[in-house]
Image (cartoon, rainbow, N blue to C red; front, top):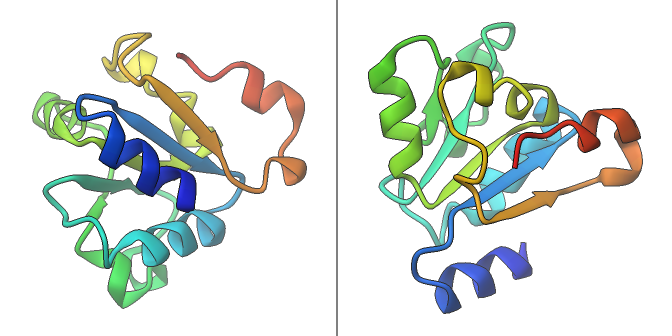
Length: 123
């Protein structure tokens, strides 16, 4: 979390992809960052398999339910911080987010992820 604060404040054009192996871990990251970053700067991309009722009240204002529409992709690409699970991040390229869009990849709880999941993230 501290790294995100520093990157955001010192690199004004830096786009940050913040991932974790599970939805709960990703929601926890967004909850921790919510006081510092408004929804205009940060987006939580939620997989269709996770219902809004499972998301914490703090994180709900940051949630984008899915990447199904072109407008959804454009909205996500405008944000400086995008948080999602590793699995969802691996789908970004196929949904229209170009490789190289994010300048930084942060994988929280990387020890709980499979190496092949992390190695195939489109950066």
